[in-house]
Length: 305
Image (cartoon, rainbow, N blue to C red; front, side):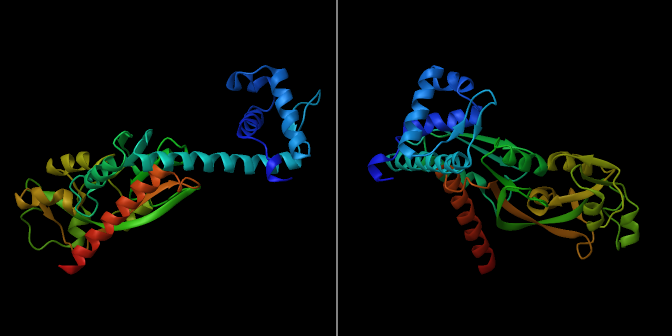
């Protein structure tokens, strides 16, 4: 087939719609065409290609083997054209649309992430883009990426999930804390056995294996956010883990104490994730690059100190 005989984009859009809806009649509403018009367009496409794309009749609708192969190439071509259009709009400064960014809670005080700076730079690149920022648990963020409800997410993800691309950013330090109203606050020295007897608050998304890695067999309370975790620790009735940066203001005010740092502490690996096949999208690619650059810059500054 010569270049002059390549099908036009309208025919490809009609074919992909028919394939998606599994028939001419079901594609009518999306295409705003009659069944006879769709049939004529499909016949025109098959004539240009020189092979049959689908079987239709009393046996129902089905793509031929060549139709299946041509569908995948058509979808890829149309996706690439959309990316190209978005790129051209971005260069012109007219890029619009929505970026749905998900993060875990309590990142605003994290000097290694500084997500606010990255969002600021992103908005300078794309002032017309609507940003939807959502705070969710790690499992909810992964599910949102898999279901295409989120475009990009940042957090600590023990399991990345299928069809998810992950890029490492940095590691967040966590320590075990008690408050100034807890019985351990003024106790010196403190042993592991003594700490193991205390009432522990953990994350609701931790399983028994995760809890065991942190040095405990069970927890007495569970939370979905760091703020809730801090509230329970400040009550004086629980001990629990917090990110070092998040606990710092209360440590400085002598409201929190890190318990036996040589034994209790861990680093949570942070990464950004997005759905496989979407890395070429201009909005996702730009935010990804901004976050990775910011993370590298802060790592270098930390190492230089």
